[in-house]
Amino acid sequence: MDFGHDGAMAEKGEERDGVNLTNLDQELYEGAGATKRDLIDYLDVMSDRILPVLRDRPLSVIRLLRGQDQFMQKNLPKYTPDWVPRTEVWAEASHRQVTYGLCNDRRTLLWFGNQRALEYHPALMVAGDLHPTHLIMDLDPPEGGAFSLAVGAARLVRQALADAGMSGAVKTSGSKGVHVFVPLDGKAAVEDVAAATRAVAARAERIDPELATTAFIRDDRHGKVFLDATRSGGATVVAAYSPRIRPGVRVSFPLAWDELDAVTPADFTIHTAPALLADRDVWAAEMPPPQALDPGLVEEGHTIPVARVQAMHEGKRRARAKRQAADES
Image (tube, rainbow, N blue to C red; front, side, top):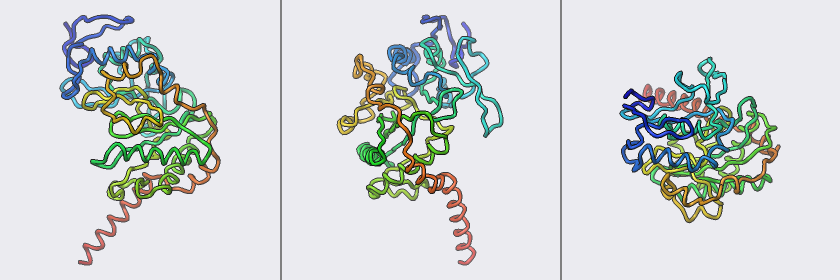
């Protein structure tokens, strides 16, 4: 016996595609209702659907080792087998090269699963290309709010896109909300996609400001659905069909737009998703063809401040006002 890289005592287990799978009977985490074998089996049976959405994209994974807190891994560990595909990406924030894995084949996917990689967060661009492949909107209901609120906000986004001659596909996030993905033709720059995303959010908010908000500061949302337009550039979004570290090991599950009212995120787990899909690939079937970014969205978006920057300035302004009020009292 020796200590495996999944963080626990490992012994020779079963082998699939040349990957030695260890500690398969261990529970993934408290409340998972699933073992590591369940995770591996899910990734294996779903590999034909998962791999196309991961292929050639620098991959970040969220791992959960026994007795430790979950963590996001970007840089491949030194013990990674030579046969795992990889790419080098310069990280401006940390001023260093990061070696990302490329999950392009079943063997690599099984290896990640054996590392207790539960969540799969691919980049929004393929390796070697700085053009985003999708415009993405992340929609979560307010604290304690029903999933139906996020669904309603997704329909606002759909309408805003339609008004600009664009369309997208929808999936559960695997947590509380939904993601809208709009496939692009690969010609738009990062800054223009980010701007267009802000414009889509602003237009969706204008359609129904009682339901949805673009307010980045949580206290300013007042129980509305947050239209998160920050998923662009170097951001990642959990992949379609990826498990999530949630009760029951939910899955980010693609749906047709007319199915949204009949489901909840808890319907889709690593136990239920394969049977619900049967032999279908809903994400591929529902995804529209790649499309050009609407120039009007880009133009409007460049007039909208970047949310995080605006929130930082607003936070400083409020802090100054609070200090001034305290000095005058």
